[in-house]
Image (cartoon, rainbow, N blue to C red; front, side, top):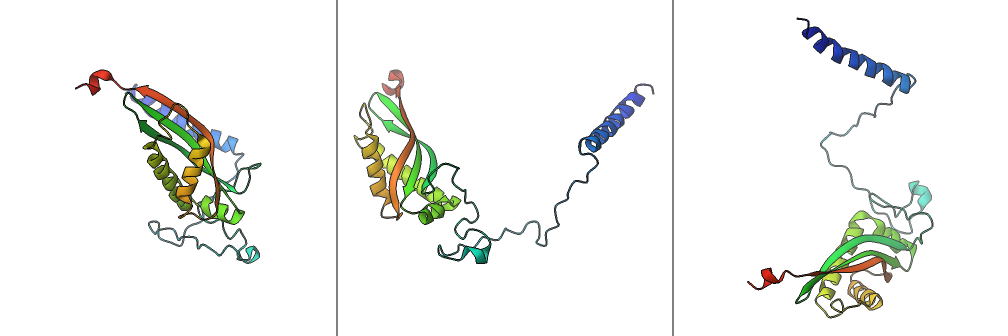
Length: 190
């Protein structure tokens, strides 16, 4: 019976102490409850309509181009540059595998195109196209050499993207490095 009292009293005392500490830390202010939603909890969220680029912002109350998933450019960064992300591509060689790691950004000619490609779904399509172009370039001698000409690689990727994505003025490498990894000779001789 005696061991049962501390096993019951200790959790109750801890709950009371936690409640009291919460009241003290919030100074007794009521925590705002979220407003109840009129839609069913499992209903899909409505998609934000994509407005024309020349729509009047004053009618909408917010930017017409930056819809769901749009991220504004960081302060101090050119508004025409859209960061795409880092990608890793293996380049197969007879005695080694070279892993090329690059962090990409794409420069556009005008801010309207850049805002369009800041939307998540458009950035993903752009990223996939850059990865496909980089993978295609990995099969060529351009990435197989001891040094890689990033200007030529940028021009190649830009040429691959131009028919599908209008308005691209340049493909930028924010970071670029490569690492050679020797193949295991015992595993390749079997």
